[in-house]
Image 1 (cartoon, helix red, strand yellow):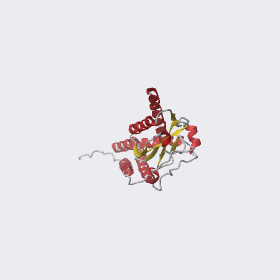
Image 2 (cartoon, rainbow, N blue to C red):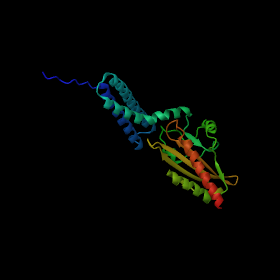
Image 3 (cartoon, rainbow, N blue to C red):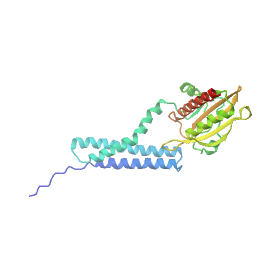
Image 4 (cartoon, rainbow, N blue to C red):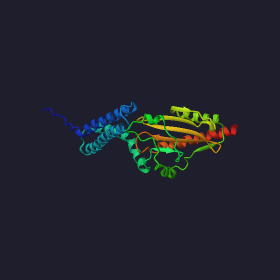
Length: 260
C-alpha cells in the first residue's frame, strides 16, 4: 500500500493577514492619490489614510500572531505571514514615528514673526474651503510660539529696496514655492508682499506662506508667516520652514551689506 506523505496544513490566519495588509495598502494608496489630485479635502484624506493604516495594522497584528502559531505548530504559511509583516511594518513605520512628535508638540498650525500685526493672506482667503482652517492668526498661539521658538522674529536691515526684493526673490526661487501674488517693495512709498503656497510631500496638503516687507524706523523690515490649511497639528513643519527661511535671508542680507 502506497503511503501518502504527511503535509502540514497551511495557517489560514497567515493567508488572511496578507490579504488584510494588501487591502490596507490599497486604501492608503487611494487616499494619497485622491488627496494629491484634490478629490478629497484635508479632513477626508486624513480619515481615509487613517482607515488604511488601521486595516494595515490589523494585518500586521494578524501576521505576528500567525507567525507565532506557525513557529509552535509547524503549519505552513510562513511566507505569507512574513510578507504581511514586512509590508505592514513598512507602511506603518512613518505614521508611528510621527505619533510621539505630535504628542510632544502643542497643537499649532500657524507661525508668524509679527504677533501684533501678522502678515495677512489674500489669495488663500479665497482658496480655502469652508472645512479648512481660518486665515486669521490665532492670538493664543503667540504665547506658545514665544516659548518654543524665540528665534522666530522679524529681520531688520539697512539695505535699499532693490536688494531686499532680490533677497526675497532668491529665497522663493530656491525653495520652489508657488507664487500666487507678488508686489515689489519700494521703501517708504510702498510695502512689498509675496504670497505663496507649497504642498506636503505625501498627501500634498497645502501650506500658505506670505512674506511682507515694509519700512520701520527707517529700516527695511521683513516679516514672514506660514500656516497649514488643514489640521490643528503641523508637527513643527511651519516653524522649521520659517526658521530656515529667516536664516537664509539673514545670511543673504549680511552678504549684501558686506558688498556695499
